Amino acid sequence: MTASLDIARRLDRLPWSRWHWRVVLALGVAWVLDGLEVTLVGSVGAVLERPDTLALTAVQVGWSGSLYLAGAIVGALVFGRLSDRLGRKRLFLATLAVYAVATLATAFSTDFTFFALCRFVTGLGIGGEYAAINSAIDELVPARVRGRVNLAINGSFWIGAALGAASSLLLLHPDVLGPVQGWRVGFAMGALLAVGMVLVRRHVPESPRWLLRHGRAEEAHRIVAEIEAEVAAQHGPLPPLEPTPQREHRRGVPEMREVLHVLLRRYRARSGVALSLMLAQAFFYNAIFFSYALVLTRFYGVADHRVALYIFPFALGNVLGPLLLGPLFDRVGRRRMIALTYSLAGVGLAATGVAFVSDVLDARSQALCWSVVFFFASAAASSAYLTVSEIFPLEMRAMAIAIFYAVGTGAGGFAAPLFFGWLVESGLRANVAIGYGIGAFLVIVAGLLALRFGVDAECKPLEEIAPSMDRPPEATPIAGAPTGGSAHR
Image (cartoon, rainbow, N blue to C red; front, side, top):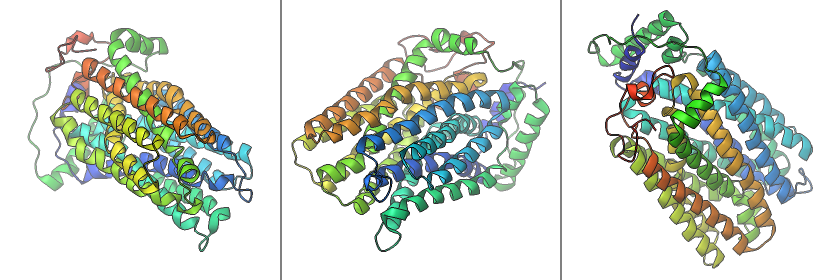
């Protein structure tokens, strides 16, 4: 039987084609939807405090953000495990359906309890998306462009953010629907988008790499042959490949004790880097983004219905960062670019905090400062997901993504909205600036850890970066690994 590396070589040699664009668009919508959700809550946070809407307090707005993240944590763990067991395709269809139902229900909220419950269930779907989607994308995209594609897809969160800002700006305007009904229609629109994407995703195939690992070799080769035929129809005949002599390594879904052994023993340094990257970016992003509307309204006097205007420069920086810096993660290398983007994001946020507490900014300049900071932070945060999705074996890839997302988001993301809600509620700029300082410190430390202990995974097949769990890690050396330790950290 042809070896698994033969499947990998066939997928990695493919030129970029219309087929790849369809996969990216169908799967990348997960991040667009997350951006839409988070921005809607951020944009309508102040609106939901009104007595004629849900009459929430600033702390309850923070709680709703934290419960959304709590749902995402649970969803990542549950659906991540199922993705490794049942396949990528079944799960990225199921998680999108969960999201669609829950976000539609959010539009009919009548009080904080129901709203919070809907946010939790919406998070379940989004968290499951992260595990299934990032696994599928990495396993279908050629190795030579995996970094830039992954960063661009993760950066599409901010396309959703811009859509959320535009829709809230329009829907909350007094001359359109106004704040009382506009926020409800905004959530309903997200559900409609999700339903449309379910139909598109039906045509995305199961990961051939996953099929091969689960003994479905004939189906895996059939899917790869169909992909090759479509790509060849666009680009011409593909160069032949000599079959690889290695045997196929097959095994079922590993037990949790085996997963933990890989994370805590075989690849403990990799795990430490992955955890630090995920924790730092989760705190950094959720602290600022879930509270930006409160900062603008409380400290700069921005009207509720105009808050969304300030998301556009913020979103622009976040979209451009991964798009412009993404190719460098494949050319310059993972470790150097991760360290650079994390460090620059931290320094920029620290400087913004100093300017904020010194009261030298207005609403516009504050938004521009955030835009510059998150030009680097967006690429940095996207690289955290890229790192986690490519440095662990295929048999446990989705579960590894889920674990690090859950731990990082639980420690950094869940606490951040509540923490910043309390800081904003205090009304003191100095308190908010302290929160900015904590976020800056975390990302700088994470970047330095990645530089020292990270893996040079650029342009390498996934099977070379992390061999099958039934092979010893030294069996496939990685050329160009950092000199600070073993190639397989």
